[in-house]
Image 1 (cartoon, helix red, strand yellow):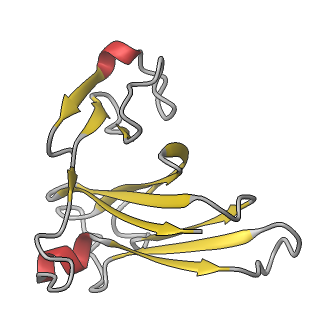
Image 2 (cartoon, one colour):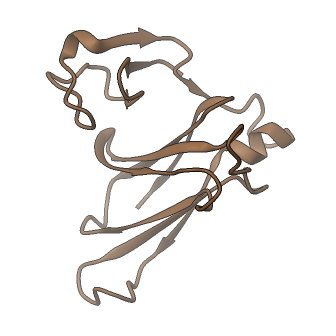
Length: 147
């Protein structure tokens, strides 16, 4: 899948345009390069390989938040139907979240002390949620769902 990738922090713009400055690291628009294969997609979404099962995010929407009772929807994400390793030589660097193709947040991960998962508390309760994870060995993978 095509995307515009920040050469500094690996943020991927999925709305078809490079921002004036990167929303993650502040790099200028000139730091973005278009890549045809910026995001990997499964070859057959009905028959995933083990590699795909470790990299495609699994999204769980929780309609009732336990922390903020009114106007909050939780998004829980883990990396893979088969849990992705978090070792110094193979791990998830970050998880980026988008609503309607616009970036909203990044969760940075480090190996050894963290699991390949994250959560957000959204004010939004409609739109298309996209989650992109970046593996240090196998690149970026996406999963999308409607809120």
